[in-house]
Figure 1 (cartoon, rainbow, N blue to C red):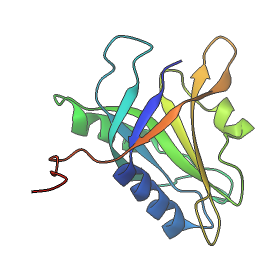
Figure 2: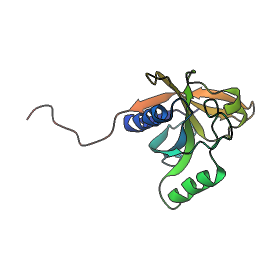
Figure 3: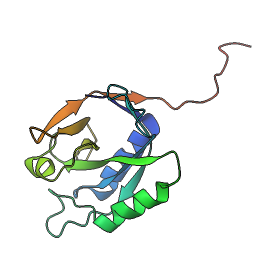
Length: 156
């Protein structure tokens, strides 16, 4: 299974979103460079986009992204070098692991980032992909990477 590369800035955006909507679940899109064709190559998230939690019920334990919102996100990236490669959501006061509901509603190919959030902190994050034959989530290696920028000399 491939690993997921997530920039520190994107992770901080997810954390901020989770804290902003706590005690409800937040959700959003992982925007990535297209897969290079090698299933072992890491998936690289270049940005995240918040989505609306449209679950018709208690949003503290469930999230749903409306199909039109996913379609709109996909259209925004048509013709670019970016794709909707997955989703993120928070688990208020629960571990950063997918629930049975998450697993039952997951799609193969996408990567899912789950963030634990409490009133004080965002203590844990995990990344998962659905194994299609077993219909079970498998954890994937999550690599949090610093932003790339111009190299600054150590001394002048």
